[in-house]
Length: 440
Image 1: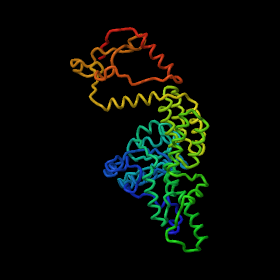
Image 2: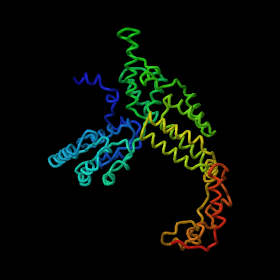
Image 3: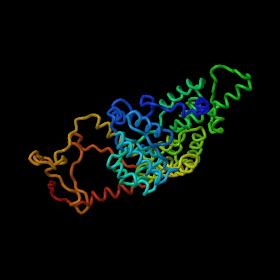
Image 4: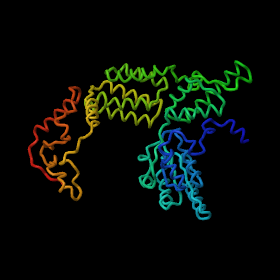
């Protein structure tokens, strides 16, 4: 029975890591010297919440952390469990602790789905240390988890898996299933899963079945030892949601999207956005590019563009594909229609170059004066508090003396930027001269 179950088990289950050394893509948590590994090595866990997208290993990591640290494990699902289930789990944990001195990790998947009364049940047990709570969620816990429970846990973020970790997972899958993945098939799997290893392996499972059926039809039973899986098999497994796209084409289309938005052409911007999505491009990647572009190419000409782009990026995480296509299209069209200015980009580049030359000291009057002895050193002396001036601005130096009268920000005449700069200059021109106000 066990062998039959294993033979039919999904790849994601067969490849589930069993130790911290098998975990890929979360080195900031489980790498050498990193927090979770150190706690496991010390065999001392504290309550925590794992927050990250689907398929990043939250459930697996919770199991490994508990078993490797020597804790008993118990779990409930926030989707199907109620108050009664939580109480029974807490009672079992108390019995283990009282009878055997054995600590329990209570793992709650989708913890954000627990209502307030269910979450409140966990507070006394986590506060007294009767259990170690590990919750997993794909939603922002600051919005979905009670503040009281958040204050009793440590939040650890799991990141979408990058290209290198995903390729490691595929290598393990090839060895386990005795299949051979073409390079283009690997690129398609990695590029279309959006950092979700489970989704990637599910696609590979389906592609393997399709490839095997094709091979059996061509050769009869007993084909080659290593089944060959191509990009075409991956495309079929994803219902055609892959466009044949070379690596060069990918970067060319990304460049075309950015330049179309920069060039204020909403039709072209929307075309290249959809072309990339149809090719399996990550919605997160496209959202990040639009956020960057909002400051790089629009900037102060329309600061609302950054708000729109950032909201779109959050919506991608919250909604996911295919619905997130609407949000990305909304953002791409808005950014295309917005006036353009690269004054922020230019100013940042010039200031970066100046800072990297080094040797610039903070002027004495700007230095921290909130400690004993600072005033005797002259720190903070002659600093003028701008709020004491009617215009909210006073004429005093803020740049290092060594930089002279350097000016890095050169405003454009586009969009809202001239109005903002005009108001800024007007405040400076109308400011009244006042004497220094020492700040203690």
